[in-house]
Image 1 (cartoon, helix red, strand yellow):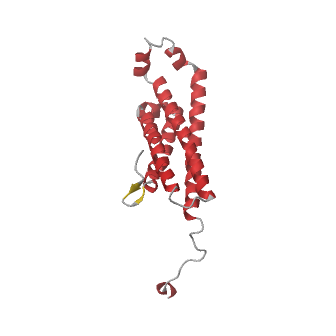
Image 2 (cartoon, one colour):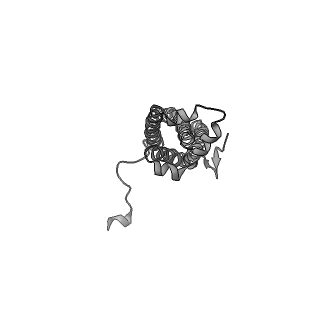
Image 3 (cartoon, helix red, strand yellow):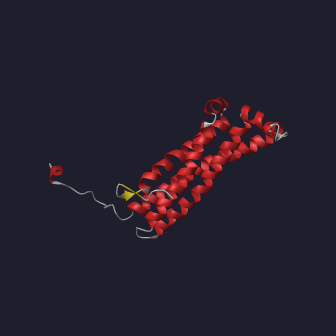
Length: 177
């Protein structure tokens, strides 16, 4: 399910950049769409599309990370990073679902198409309690997904760099003048 090696290097180190960009971007777009009606109107379908791209990037990155974990020392730091990474799929799925729901409920074209099949769609779309609940859930998921990306990145850096840095910088003859 996706590449594990690119140009002789673990694909995880490349793919993780898509996740680090797309997941927070999807969260930001969702928060903007929820909090700022003018932004929602301008962003339109872009918000759920970016959230979908993020959702696709997460399992590809997880797969390459699982491959990499089998080829490095499985110390507690790597296990912790892997555990945190596994949790991001739920955050990304929630971001995508909420972005899609928010867009659909605020898209005149979608609600017009759904009216014949779902006669109560106008009631749901115009219900203040539904809107507030979705908005709060969207904001919580947006913040949570960004925090989770940070936690995963930090644990990955700890796993990759732990005990590899020396306390004193190396000196060269050129630096002693």
